[in-house]
Image 1 (cartoon, rainbow, N blue to C red):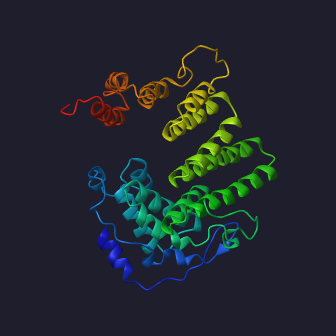
Image 2 (image 1 turned 135 degrees about the horizontal axis):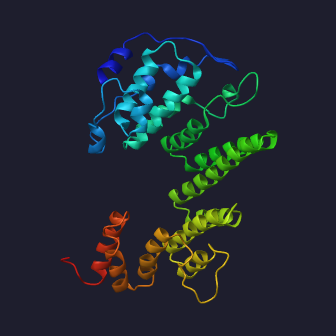
Image 3 (image 1 turned 90 degrees about the horizontal axis):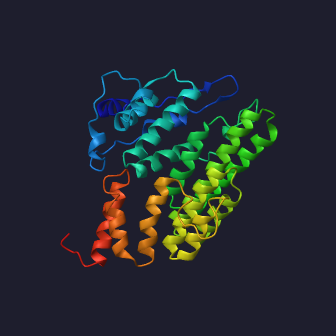
Length: 320
């Protein structure tokens, strides 16, 4: 497949105008061979380097079944060599390419390639007929993160999510279809979580905590409130505020009664994980050791092993 890309790179650049039912745009700049880079296998996790897949497996199947390396190669090859792609197909292929790269530990490469899209909030990407953005929503959300990472502008990423939120609110306001409104409201909530995650990645834990607190207080239902409250609790633990962490753990359930345990109201898996974390935060490493041992064969085994090792160091069991 790399040979196919090398061959395609030798072709002359094409200048083809692609159109669909609602817009006609010259997006040939997205198909330039120079937009795509050769993927080094050095940093790709071994399971993704040679995942078995039958020859001729369709791209959607490759991506869906976890053959991300091959999916990334095939997407780029199709973009460079296929002259009959519609705008919809081009954007779908770009999304598969960028998403697959991030999933095989090639996020920096995906960031470079995402810059080919330019400003995704530009009027250029608005339909001439409807005024709606012609880029798929998933591609827009992914591009915001990748472009921000590439130019080392986390604050710009936050601003990008807010720009998408403005667009989402407009769609909610303008739609009379309850199902469509529900879809855009869900996308708006997802953007809120992404903003909080970006703030935490920036190291601004206080801002991230405040943001997730506001989301939890405005949660649409009890289940969402539990989930967001547990995230706030985890942030409080990370910041060393044990009292606030316990308070937010309690706030995840409207039926909380005084005197009940602090982690009782989280879903079982989260409850189990928070128990040893609370013990560690309280300096009770002996109890944390027993808690983490119970998780070694659970779905959280990898997390349990790391934290168990830390607890064993603090309790003087260095050889173990």
